Image 1 (tube, rainbow, N blue to C red):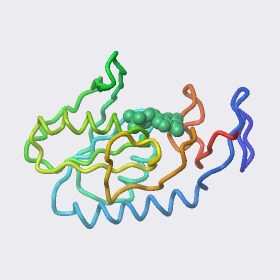
Image 2: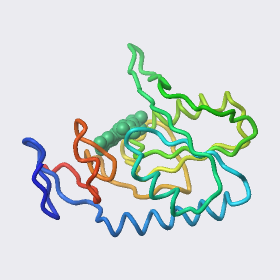
Image 3: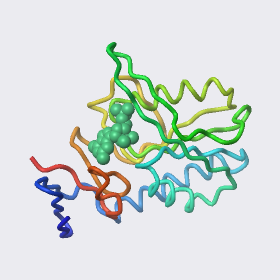
Amino acid sequence: MIGEDLQITIGKRHFVELLTQEAIQNRVSELAQGLHTQYRNLDPVFIVVLNGAFIFAADLLRASGLNCDIQFVKLSSYQGTTSTGIVQQILGVQIPLRGRHVVVVEDIVDTGRTMKYFGKLLENENPASIEFVTLLSKPDCHETVFESPYIGFEIPDKFVIGYGLDLDGKARNLPAIYQLAE
Ligand code: 5GP
């Protein structure tokens, strides 16, 4: 990986900066404040979706100052022979969610399939509420309605890396976000 501030090369792929470290940190602070205001008396459970959301979640939840539980899940989506995707929960939630205020922390909502099906799995646990926080959303790619007051940035339909998001395991530790150059 060759890194300059505004351009990154991984193998033969070139990426250009889309969101600066400063822009990300400012937005994460805003999201954290919003969460603090909404959840400060609700003892929420945050469910962090691995791997991509690990850096976002660390910054967000530290900045939120909330008294909360934090759990981790690993989800994998499979596209079957039908058009309906299913989501498998690999690392499951370790505590009961019944009656709890649940907030899912995701890196990026692309088609929205992962969040739609994970939301359905969570509903079966009878939580008091379910909310989604995502750093990034690609509205042009959504196959399903995805609404949340906690969307960090809406971005174009381009592959992005950095700040937790990877290309074949690389680039997750970049402090800014880069998009694939044409
Ligand atoms: P969805 O189910 O919304 O289509 O997919 C969401 C998942 O796809 C994200 O959690 C992420 O792992 C992956 N993904 C979607 N778009 C991108 C992207 O631009 N870059 C990276 N690195 N992963 C992406």
